[in-house]
Length: 101
Image (tube, rainbow, N blue to C red):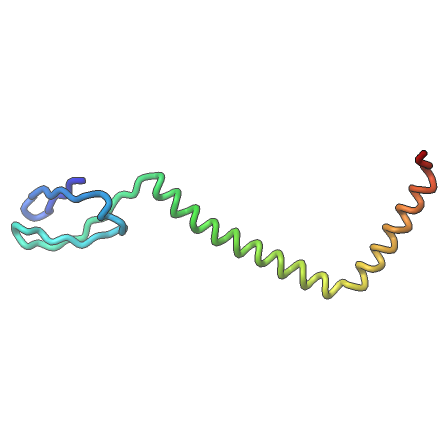
């Protein structure tokens, strides 16, 4: 990757693997000018950064659902027993209607 000094317009060659930040400070070896250069991130690397963020969001969302499920289970324990009793009666009713040989 070639980077040009904005003061003296000297062109420097920089290896891509050394550009891991979004903004990098440079100092020209010819005129001693200092400037910040914004690195253009290709679409793949940008998408990869978004995916890392979405994995964190997904983990947080799963953790939230687990906590919500556990708290509802504790709070509505008695109601679940009534539902279970209702479903058991319903299944018994269906079994009595349709005899299986």
